[in-house]
Image (cartoon, rainbow, N blue to C red; front, side, top):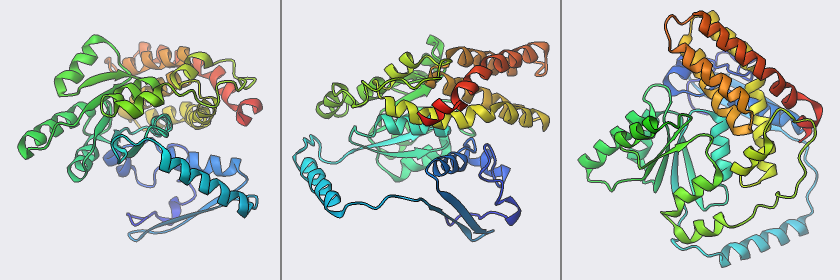
Length: 356
């Protein structure tokens, strides 16, 4: 990385959840501070190690070591030849893959959308906030934009209005923009349409919903993807995960058990550390960050099927917007979250769930 670099005193902390070397980076570019923590967790699950060196002002170098079994060269060559032949014979109605811009600041949601569209013939770029989405749209042609509504700095509605204004000024064709939001009331959908979005998709968004949205751009290939059953439908549910409505969550992911298990691994990092992260935000008086954490918890809990926790987080998010911000209602809402989050954490951190 050739960015701003990391101070030596911060190198040991950047792998912790919700930690950034410089708080101004989070304020300017968003993100929940989970990327490196998730990376380290996955590396450790594979019995590997990850390390970092950095010079402030000059950039940062990360590397990881994984103990991998030796591959059979003949099998690799055979598989490569088969993949090449399959790709050559596959139907490609429009030639190049769809160029998709995903404006989303939550790493778990980014991973989920990328996984859902992994086999849909898409090239996905990610923007962590609204201003970045506008800047990337200026530089690159996109066939479609999935725009999260609530992002730091410039939100999704403001970014959409900016893009529509620039389209008119620059004479560029209108790009389809789909709003993504955990708020699903009619007034929320109307606000997205008024901002210039083509449709309002409620989170947690399903794989079928994303593919249906793309089907208007590439009907033939998307139709095939919509009607292709994933190879994981018959896999048994992992034992021990009883606090989650797996059936509902799996239905959104088109029955893909492997995808659901990977999302659980990512979500467990966020949810397990959420109480202490919320406490740290309140301890320093960062109410905006505390409210944002509640919003992210609502979205992620709903994605994995923890609906009682998602509802409790929704109540807490709303309580932060009611003055005074440290009211009895706020304390009651936090208690509601603490009660709902405990069984979910236990389900995500028990040994059977870890092995899923």
